[in-house]
Image (cartoon, rainbow, N blue to C red; front, top):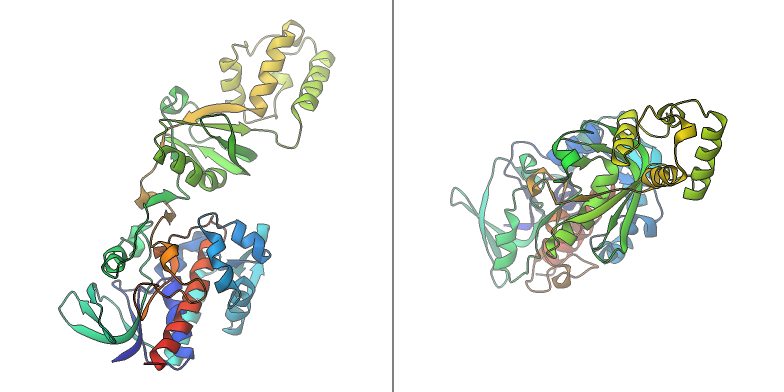
Length: 419
């Protein structure tokens, strides 16, 4: 008989097991894979972006998928506590751009190893290569039924089995039936932090494939023309559409619009976000007046990657060899606008299994925010990506996982002692 059993050995499950054991609970951690912390080990390009040092309100703002739900949990354990916790385990951290925190060693394995060593110190029972078939919820004791038909009796259960993104790490949606059996609602699942596809001719013809854009502002628009979101970061044109940090951040808004039935979504790239349109126009006017015999293409060099400039010149029907003296005012204005609003349509995304993060999951309306306990079933807790909470990449999802894991583990242990 265990006090607390955690299903899932990702970041939230590892932290939940540690938190429960630190309270003195007899704790079991079950994972179907042969390695714990697989998602942690590949996060941040193998360097592990463990959290973010931004103020709490900013961190919550970077978790647009129900991030406000986390305020209660953050009052118990927040991103600053995560930093202190890992440094207390001997993992020195360093801050990089936008508040992202990484191990000084640049090795995700150091983060995983520190957590595994803490599990060992606390005497947590670990069962790997152990697949859960079902959970039988009892009036006092729950039974976890394994694939080999073994049964494990436990006072409390923490479901930390992840969503459906990055399935090779073990996130294959196993937890949703267990949550449904306890009466929980699973909100619609969809990909977030995912590359976007487009049927535009220039994308299909691979005109800009492989072209990277640095520090541009990507905007997403509703069909009524209202701007939904803008993110300023790098991005990339691919053989199927667009990708890169700015696209990943905008992707959930595009996917949600498409889920409402829209056939296409307008996006626009501001290639020069630091300069206003009128100022850019004046700058270009001055440049062409100063070099009337130069070709317009030579004068605009450096304003954007050459392939993008060539594409925009073709789109605006401007001959690249045209001398500046022969460029009409109207053509200059439309070209200037195209640098500030390179607009096209997108039509879909890569599938959920290709996404970095799962949108949707166990409805947070059925979860107690301060404890991560089910409102519908005694002794049942949820943490991590199985919940309908999702953030941007940059340490925000891992922060959510570690915080919810910590709080769920503590409260599951306390509930088990009251039985």
